[in-house]
Amino acid sequence: MPLNIPGLLVPFHLLIYPRLVVPHINVRDIRQIDFRALKESGYKGAIFDKDNCLTIPHKDVLVPELTSAWHDCRRTFGEGNVLVVSNSAGTSSDPGGIQAESVRHHLEVPVLLHSSLKPSYKTIQSIRTYFSSLPAPIREEELVVVGDRLFTDVVLAHRLRRKDSEIGPLSIWTTGLWEREALFMRWCEKLLLSGVQRWSKPTASYDQLSGLSSRVTQPISKD
Image 1: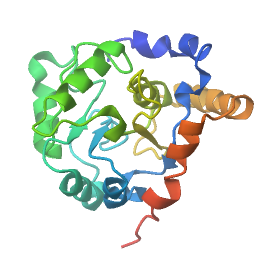
Image 2: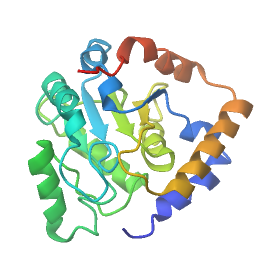
Image 3: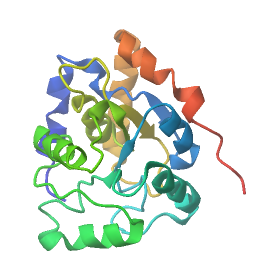
């Protein structure tokens, strides 16, 4: 994977907006998300990271334990309204979009083709273009962003908020790992998150979205 310059620049942006790395909701994995409750709360579409969120890193098939939850997500939001945005599949390091097509085949949802890595504003514009071009366009505040990395997925969710809106997408951080990787960077992200949560004050819009946690999360079934 190429060097993620947009991700490396995030700490500098945090000097101005420190709460960019604070997710609204934390879950172990997507089995804890109640997708029907999200739909009832007004959310119409979802953006997912791939590696360590839906698949084992560098693999294209869904983690078997997530089969039921993933089917529920796709059935709830409908065809075309669930999008995978990866920093591997669909990027410039995926010549010809071969991996993106493989992921689309295995996960049965579209994969965004984008030349710049998350959480760049160029990628954000590509996401906006995709959801605004749907037969029933979806606004940013009607989206859920799910991923396992604070500097890419959570920051992406916050940056997607329109300047003329107080509310943006709902950010859901998956904390469980299907395969241990990038452990030092994850440790740095968590350390920074702890500091930001301790020393910065949540906004009213953050409290509004994080307050959905008890309504849109559920225990992981042991079946």
